[in-house]
Amino acid sequence: MVNLTRIYTRTGDAGETRLSDNSVARKTDLRVQAYGAVDEANSAIGVALATGGLDERITAALGIVQNELFDLGADLSNPLVAEPQWEPLRIVQESIDRLETWCDEFGEDLPNLRSFILPGGTPAAAQLHVARTVVRRAERIAWEAAEQYGTEVTDDPEQTPGGVSLLAIKYLNRLSDLLFIMSRAANGAAEVLWVPGGERNPDQMQPR
Image (tube, rainbow, N blue to C red; front, side, top):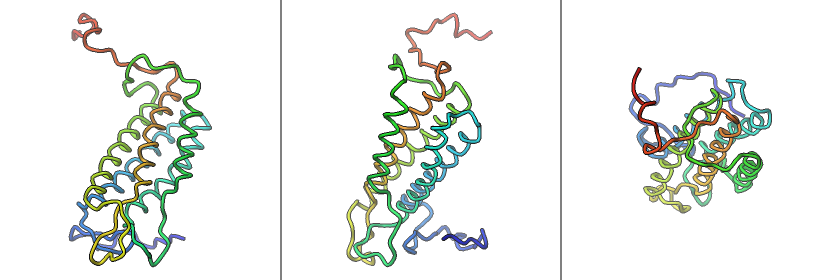
């Protein structure tokens, strides 16, 4: 149970914060940046939902995703240690499997792509593209954090910081795929395809 009685604490004014295991980290730490980008992605999904222009099945799935993104943020902020004092929130394989199932379900009736897609179309679909790109950024930062801290469990966190969970990064990868598919499903006939430079009509590109 979370019980927030005050939002500001002044504890971060020196550029430091605490990870979920209570260890101190700089606010520029790659783990902090990774879960911060996850928070941005969750907010972008919230805007997409607020448009009211999404299918009920997509809305329901995104509601689950938003909750799991909080779990994911907790995962990224909790270094992997052998015997944690408290059981940490972690992304599990079943959640990734569910994302893959949704990718198949929502993508089943979509037409084959003839070109890359331009972000746009309906407001909801365009916002899902924004969420997709933020998730991609979160994934890149998480990989940077994994390169710095590793992906292994540590027996001595005082000497060796714990690594980053690979399942958390895998979740981000699958989620970006799902958001792409959902944006296509939300757009339908409003989907906007990229026209390569050699195929664009120069007359249509002249300013009026």
